[in-house]
Length: 177
View (cartoon, helix red, strand yellow):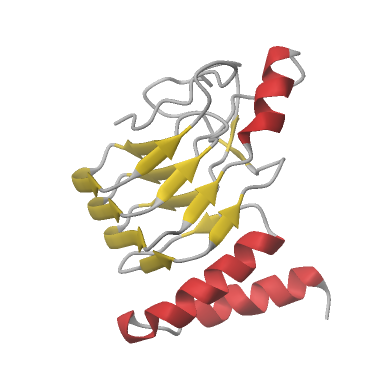
């Protein structure tokens, strides 16, 4: 079975699980993240991160944010985020010693050398959503902003460790509401 078909099968099977299968869903999400460059969530999701998730060098393109009308660094689309969701309700991203690593070094070098044609994406972006909890995880080396809850309501973010170099990591803000 090709990698693409395996990923599609995993993603389709994720839709069948409920809150009782959180550990299994988390393992499948981590497996998917190691194969593809993005995790998209649906409402009612609980993602428990107990292992490391590594970002990819290239992420899918997305339209610019409506409030900006263009990418922050370039006109036109922007790179997507590693973990992404839109129009969600009741989502929890939590963990115990888990790390989401955006692999920002390659992005920062390309940005400085003006090799990117699009705006870099945040590590975690949730848009037009409500009742979101992000807690007890480590986020490191985001390509751009680390967490971006865009136009969301009732967002609770706590117990995070956000790591990025003091120098050489442009616009890797911790949380940008």
